[in-house]
Image (tube, rainbow, N blue to C red; front, side, top):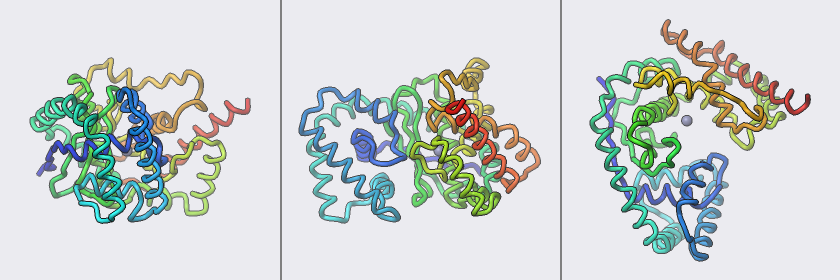
Length: 339
Ligand SMILES: [Zn+2]
């Protein structure tokens, strides 16, 4: 039996997602590209709007500092899951934001809504059977199984560059998928992004990847590895737990075609060549953590295929390989900075 997908368009979720991106960097996992895209497209912000965005940024920062179950990420995800606000202060903050941005968002909504409807139709009609087997193998490889209950995918605004997606450990059947400004020809890239997010859901349930990595390197050694990588300052504020897990998941699926699932999706040889192009230009030390994740992901793919061919699951040997790939990058960066 295949996975059950339910695609939804939810105005409120689109508003909150758009607004938190408009607010500017409030956390390490904040998506800078999305912020720039939304912000640059929002012309003539007045002082009142600007000051409210700043307050909202501080509000989210404050939430973030609470960590755990009340943290900002979690707070936002409860909004994405349509849970109503409980705290008086939160209700007031939100009422103000809605009022201030009502007109601007309504105009934007009129532009974006038909695009979301287009994508909902495409996705409703898509034959996900073609991805099912590969997704199952990938889930098995990371030590889990695909969700049995229906997953809800809320379609949200995207940039023109790439689809964006998100999941949260406390919401096991919910995915946000940013698609509105993706050109129709890139529909298979949207599917790849969705595959990536589904595997996040699998990993949230088992936390398998990180567990294996930590076990593979023992706790002290793991800390020493991370320390060495940090010293080379390649993480730039990113959480190492994220970088390690993400490099494995990015090898399995992403919006690119040089991934386990991507290779199975429809693409041209040119697209594959374009995605596999790692021309590093000004050198690794100038690259973003996201670019480094891409390199590691590509370097892990062959080994992942070997594991999957023999139905093996991620183990300590593979965990060591992930760490070694990151150390290789760290060494290369070190040599670039200290020639
Ligand atoms: Zn991811």
